[in-house]
Amino acid sequence: MQAHSEWLYKVPWGMYKAVTYVKERYGSPNIILSENGMDDPVNLTFPKSLHDSNRVNFYRSYLKELKRAINDGADITGYFAWSILDNFE
Image 1 (cartoon, rainbow, N blue to C red):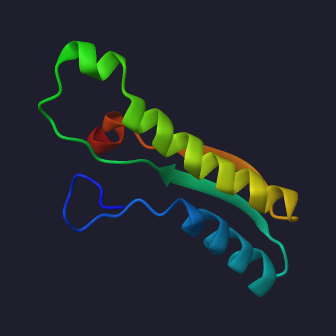
Image 2: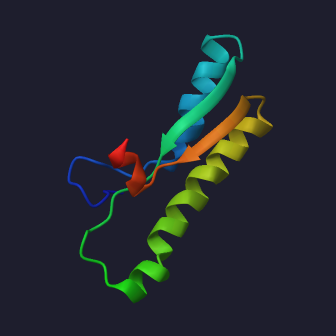
């Protein structure tokens, strides 16, 4: 599914594939995911931004796949969600 930017796609199963690849290829290292998030149109109204079901569904689907990777033995000790504040780093 395409994200708001035309060059970004939402691929929750990719979280599972990437984490399990690292686990299998590099002998189950400790993994900290430092940034995961989605873009959205900048013109959301305040009420729409309060009830942001797209973002809730995005994080739910990615975290579900991350949990599946953990259940399959991936050593995850950190996960950080991307936010607009990351743009000011």
